[in-house]
Image (tube, rainbow over all chains, first blue to last red; front, side, top):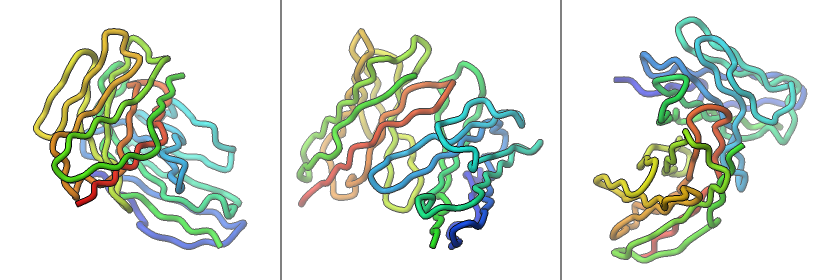
Length: 115
Length: 108
């Protein structure tokens, strides 16, 4: 069973540009969540999608957005990049929505560097 | 909104038992407690999960008191390969909040 796949693994952008990251969840998983990880900041929750609908959103500015497609694949977009957006962006999928124990399966992440 | 608090770092030696405690005072009735392990440049991976009392698997034990306001991850006889960041997580719905994580350094 293939794991969570994130692309690209590494990318470099300059300030003001935008970036789109992709996440393919484990087959059959309908929930996809996104996290930003910077040194010393742990895992910061960005948003979660379930069946193409955003269920929850963390405390990030509107420059951070996402969507989910009918095949459960998800993308996140960051517009007008700032230096502080440099981070490892992690995607996680889980098998169920609603009231469940919700083990999260993480991808390897997309490391974004903003120059 | 559940928030977890863990020690920032811990040191141990090979062969010792390590206990990492996480505080989650505002845990909701339906929330499970899950621990993840993360190595550098990798995504976190599941270690163990519980709701109350004690859970044990092949790699760790999880102790949860009756009030569920804290939990303790116990790693028996750690090795150098257990050097990693350990995250405590609560919640199954809503915002998937993680704590800062505990960096465990295992020394020879």
